View 1: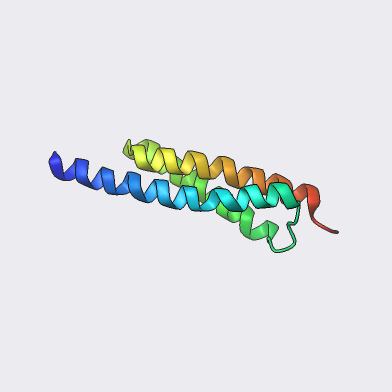
View 2: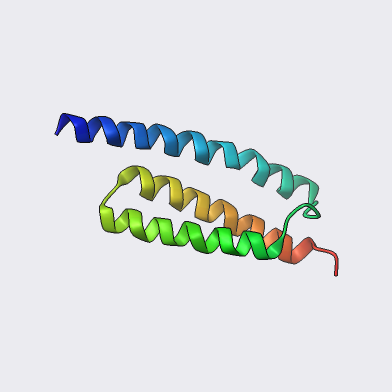
Length: 89
C-alpha cells in the first residue's frame, strides 16, 4: 500500500507540473488573441487525447490523472475556442 501511495504521489507531482506548465500558454493566448502558431487539427487531436486520458484515469481511479486531465481538458478547450474564434481564414 505504501508503494501505491508513493506512486500516486509521483503522479500528483507530475500532474501539477505538467498542468501548471500549460496554464501560462492559455493566459497568453487569452490576452493576446494571437493563435497564429496553433494548428486547429493538432489541438483538436490533443483535446480528444486528453478526454481519453481523463476517461482512463476515472476508470483506473487515479486522482492524479483525473485532476491533471480535467484541468488540461478545460484549458485546451479554451484554447480550441480561441483558435476557432481568432484564426485568420
